[in-house]
Length: 170
Image (cartoon, rainbow, N blue to C red):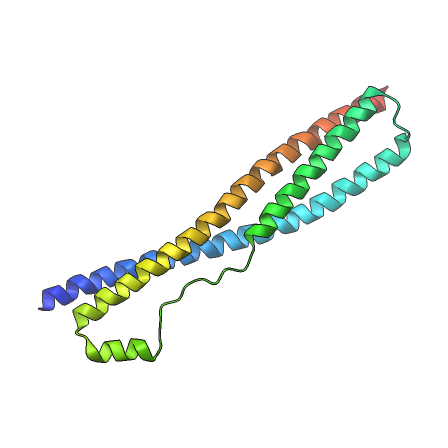
């Protein structure tokens, strides 16, 4: 009987550890998203202000290079705004599952043997882990798409600076 209890105790510890790993992944994703949204907010404001100042100098737009600059700048700002939106959506408040600790839990402990309790808690951890994993995967999917938009915006900003150099040397 002791061996059976150890087996289910190990199962419970493994399930609990898996659940804790998912909670850590969730926290890590939240932290990264918070940092990204702060940086993107600064980038959008700085780049938008820079473009506005440059456009004031070159309005009305009368050359193909100026139109290219406006086009690349608009694309960069749209990609930055899209990535900001995606990251903001990844920060939505999700109620993460918790292991129960209520009267029902205590009643279950009184009614059942140790092996049954460990098995029941392992199953609870499994369900909680599945819910947490789904939330984490959803968050990471949004962050992956945002990262693609950040890459697009970086290339667009680079292209707009190249076109600006062409404008300045002409």
